[in-house]
Amino acid sequence: LPHHTAVVSHIALDIGGSLTKLVYFSREAYSKELGGRLNFLRFEADQIDQCFEFILELQKKQQALDGSKPGELCVMATGGGAYKYYDDMKKILGVEVLREDEMECLIIGLDFFITEIPREVFTHDEEDPMHFEEPRLDIYPYLLVNIGSGVSMVKVSGPRQYERIGGTSLGGGTLWGLLSLLTGARSFDDMLAMADRGDNTKVDMLVGDIYGTDYSKIGLKTTTIASSFGKVFKMKRQGESEAEDGSGLSNGDSRQADGASTSDRAFAPEDISRSLLYAVSNNIGQIAYLQCEKHKLEHIYFGGSFIRGHRQTMSTLAFAIKFWSNGNKKAHFLRHEGYLGSVGAFLKRQP
Ligand code: ADP
Image 1 (tube, rainbow, N blue to C red):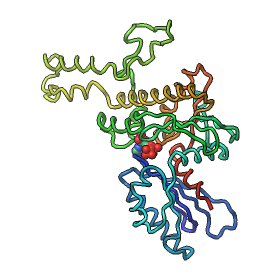
Image 2 (image 1 turned 45 degrees about the vertical axis):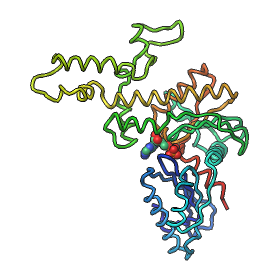
Image 3 (image 1 turned 90 degrees about the vertical axis):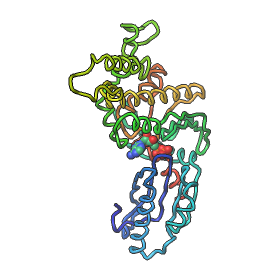
Image 4 (image 1 turned 60 degrees about the vertical axis):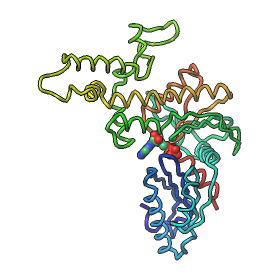
């Protein structure tokens, strides 16, 4: 919660399909210095009321502090929810809401992070999982791959010069949705924690499963995933026929006669989570690389809350870019990957 003497005059919201991202700037009320801090908060889509309550609280504190009137707070909003909740926001918060274009906010936020913020942009590999890059100015052209509920790929050729060149609907919402169906995980972080513990080779069909060896002639290792979830059908059928002829049953356990619980037993939620995380991340990594090639873009930045600073996700994306570019390109990540849009909206209306 904000410090009780903090001055808050601007709030920016990025209301997406899965999450609402909130950014506000605060500084000590009696400090003469210009410095302050940016604060970052996240609410799930169905907690939008909690987000509004949080802003009302901030407003109240502000009024108690400096006697400002209700309505003086400036709220910037971007993302689909800036339209969906526009009337609600104005009514509940009693303030003017300034709507901003989502793609523009994303790249304004990203430009700011790349050019001005030290220890924000980093590359990732096994030996050096967070290798920070110095802020730099010669950044164009670059590709932004924003992995939110869905995925947008945006070519940026100069300040506020951008074009959405592609995307895929297989994104963060897909992982979140499918894993809620397939595993007992309740939250996104549970899913990531499960993926950490999982072994995808129990679920995925590898080159080695098909060839018994590698297929080095065309550059495929034994361990390369040939088919995500490719082992499931075969194993499930085996499990079911064992259940039918009774050979797979231990005495007295009636639960096992039921097909569903047979498959529950065959596939651990951890293994399923890891396999799907790999499948979604690999797919995005490969499309990102192809877009880079097609549009002759030098640098790739990955943003969006899907990444969540998660090691496996970043390794998979980084590996995909390195592999497909024969080591010529590197994936760049950000510490505040989920807040590009809200930081961009915030910056657009800086007084
Ligand atoms: P959007 O703007 O579409 O909501 P985000 O960049 O906020 O997109 O990313 C949303 C995705 O981030 C989700 O689909 C999910 O994969 C992932 N995610 C990260 N943290 C959470 C969380 N706490 N709750 C739900 N999803 C999360």
